[in-house]
Image 1 (cartoon, rainbow, N blue to C red):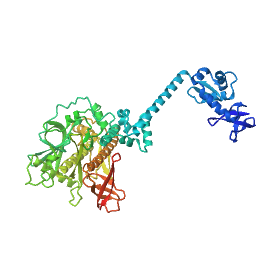
Image 2 (image 1 turned 180 degrees about the horizontal axis):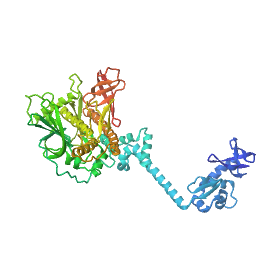
Image 3 (image 1 turned 30 degrees about the horizontal axis):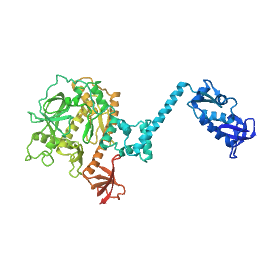
Image 4 (image 1 turned 90 degrees about the vertical axis):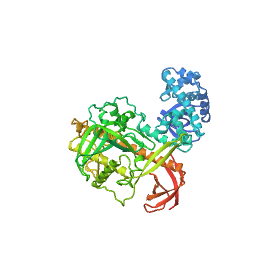
Length: 618
């Protein structure tokens, strides 16, 4: 006696050697004995032998017409023996019955298993859907094979072009495009991004980084288009001053301007004028929502993404040639630069000039500032007086210049597009703490610290930057900024560029105007704004750092810098001379901090922004 039984999801045949009420001891064709439960036995038969039965059944199963078998079985549950009799005729032999079992079990879309040897035909609707799905999968598999072959041959599939941005930055890993890409990458022993790079899908690495940042941070697009009419108060007084701003040549969001007037009593009136978008952007409007969505302008070499759309920037920027809305702080300052009093005004400020660093710094610098015999130029008198006032302010904060302190350098990046579309980068060093920088920085520290104190004294909520225990943080609780040496510090001087400044400006205008401020102390929305700003500001700074690193590496390639010098920071960390690039040099011998080394540039990994180099000389 032989048996056909099911075990571990498969079908087997064996000869019965010993029978028990609940089980059988059987021996397979190889002579191996095992115990089989009677409940697993589907069929007992005498002929043919074990060495023939499965081969015969498998051959018969391949000849069974699956559609005919499905039509034959009807709608009700059935046993395989019944179906074998329907399909092959009465008294089917063991091979025929086993063939039907094999065919049924191999077609789960056609037949649902209902128990031991029992099945039910799938409803027609279900079967059609399953077959359509199978056909789709087959087509997809064929298409994926074509794409994989193209990728392996170094060609970008045409179908990838419309979705390339998402494939690179936020792929749908269930899509057939990504599956084909991932399989091709595995076969090439690389990752999908590098494979796409190898087939020309990343012609511009800077744009690749930008598109990834935009997809993550500005999924609706970088261009903010807000259809909102901006209406300003029509009763603002016009200031009796001629103000001027000081900015880089690329600055379009001119937030701040200064003025200087000699008073009849011999004192000076110093005016610090801050652009006032809060006067024309009402809470809850589309522009207001945009401020709290974008939270800051994003800066990176050769480009920027402004917090406000161009229409709003143009309405509020302190552009020369007209009176612009501003929140002004006027300080009465003695000839010895003591601050005697201050007052705050919401007004229109005539902007007489937008001074630019590249024009003024050649005339007003470390060598010429304060020198009576130096070159004459517009605004020299005002710049000189304000510079002297700035030096006094710096000293009072305990931050006066140390002549023995190391010179700190800032860098400006300019990316120029040539007629042929090629981009070339310029990296220009600027000594930190130049007269122009000090003048502007001290005026902004003054206005931010004084307005922080004013908000605190008036018991109006605000957002403060507090530094104690070495950490700078945003908070609604007034506190000192130890690093700056001021009692209070509330960002308020860049409301066109930062949401925190915009919020504080709203509070300051309410304080000056004597109306209820938008935000109250312990306002949940205020705390939410701080958290969102911190997160966004950190992400924007990381992106700026990444792009500056990219353009440093591009500059080295552009200028064919085979060798370059740098100074050791610590261990194998080196700061490259002439640019803000810090890198690790594997294998660098232990050297004192500050040691100068000359390195050879070997290879650049553009996707990881790593530079492979080795020590040339010390």
